[in-house]
Each structure stands twice: as C-alpha cells, then as structure tokens.
Image 1 (tube, rainbow, N blue to C red):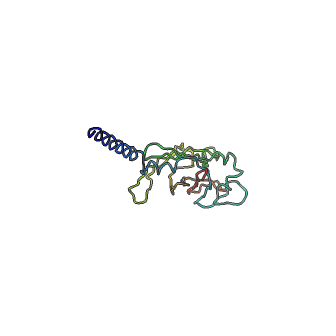
Image 2 (cartoon, rainbow, N blue to C red):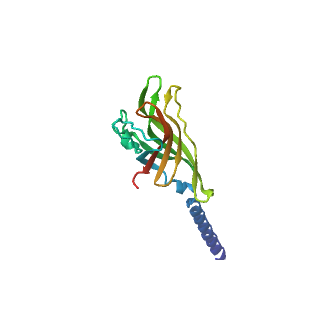
Image 3 (cartoon, helix red, strand yellow):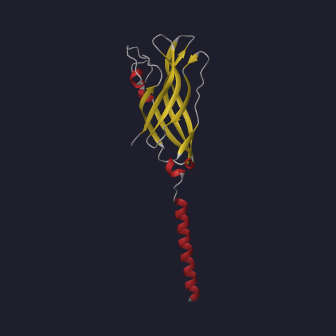
Length: 191
C-alpha cells in the first residue's frame, strides 16, 4: 500500500511539474507576442510634403497635402498605395510599403509617377526601456539622368500606425527641383 501511495504521489508530482513546464513554455510575454500586434495590412492615411510647396498637378494651388496635390496627376492611383507588416523571425518584422514617387528624366524633360516597393526590416529592442525598433534604410536605384527618391526610412512605429519618410526631389512649375521629404502615414486596417 505504501508503494502504491508513493507511486501515485510521484505520478501526481510529475504531472503537476509537466503542466507547469508546458504553461511556462507556452506563456510568452516576450517580443513574439508584442510583435504580433504590429502584423497585418495598413492603408494610407496621409502624404505630407516637408519641402517648399509646389504645384504638381497644375491647378494653380500648391499644397503640403500631397494626396490632394497628386489627384489629377497622370499615373496617380491612390488605391495602389499600401502597407503590410509581416514577421521575419522572433524579433524582426518587415514593413513593405508601395508608394508613389515623382521621377523626372532630365534628358527627356519628362516627369512621371513611379510606384516603389519599399521593404524595410525592423528589429525589436525590448531592452531599450520602452520597447523600440532598430530599422534599416531603403535606397532606390536611379539612373544618372533620373531625379526622384534617394532614401526611405521608418519613423513613429506603433501598434496602430507607422510613417515612411521618403527623401526626394519633386519638380515645381518652373521645371526646377525642390528637395524635401514625403511623409507617408499608414494606419493599421481593422483598428
């Protein structure tokens, strides 16, 4: 009888230990759970221009709100502007944004909108006090005769939105180029 009780106690003790180990293994308060809050599709909210105001669409009024300024510009389709965030590994996510950029061929003197796919990886750093991301930069390749985007970086990443800052040159009415940043603000869908 004593042996039977000892076997039952050992069985119960090992069962409780196994349950505690399973709970400890499945409970994940680390970056994997926190990163999952960022994953999903995003839509464009705003495009803000930081440079000198220019009249891109030729309506006689320049604006910092490039969503308004792009309307009526040949080749602009607002529905093509998208954002998506996917997990790469336990502490890294990939922001992929499709954004319009004015690209001018200086030899031909022609400006058109090109859509860039901008993939930028961001690594989660929980140890920085308040969790934050270390991100890559994106540098598009342009031929020597083209003027347009030169660099893209991520800012203000949170669980409901992010900003993509694209350094670029856009033409003004005098066919000169104005330098600045297009700030694309993306909001997470279904928030």
